[in-house]
Length: 264
Image 1: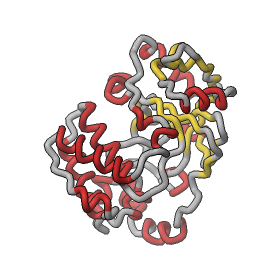
Image 2: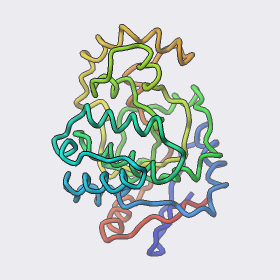
Image 3: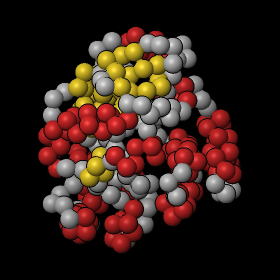
Image 4: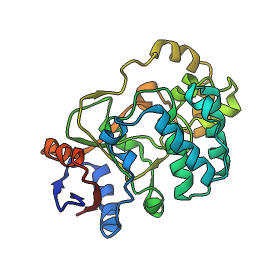
């Protein structure tokens, strides 16, 4: 499989043999003629250059496009309760359109958390008909660390992980927890490429979270018809493959090149 850039460069994605990559290969065969809807904020080097004020201005812009009046001052104050309100608007009004996804992306970008350090190759709504229910056998590829050049996928649901729910001071109410906090339900062909080592468990308040989670875990799992869901599950990536010459890819991205397509 190959990633194509708009400057005619291409980079091989060497897939790691597994049941998951067998499924992904079939999906990407269907997507091979579909242009990648790449946004500048999918590029980690673009993200690192933007200030909170610039990101907030973009959130205000995308909010206007979907009819949401965003309070700029509360965003700049990093008001998590307000971000929760903006997330709820998205949760209730999302209609499958690209504009709502852009609005949602920028809520996450404004929130007070370390920026993602990976390249995102996301077909967004274009891949919807090809998405697959998550299969538990794919957990054999779970890992909490990735290395430069690794290509992986992660949880990406309409909602929050239980840890994010707790971290963001959402209500301690089991019905709302079951409504907003979700396990991995859908496998989406959104590939992520890291240029730095990542430990997804780093700086997580695991002991504090587990005390809180113990109150709700069994009822939440019963609701979602799963046996268990730990903080390790929540923060595991699923390894797909590697781009060996990732440093060359980084060079071209820093020079302004943009991904255009993934082909078999």
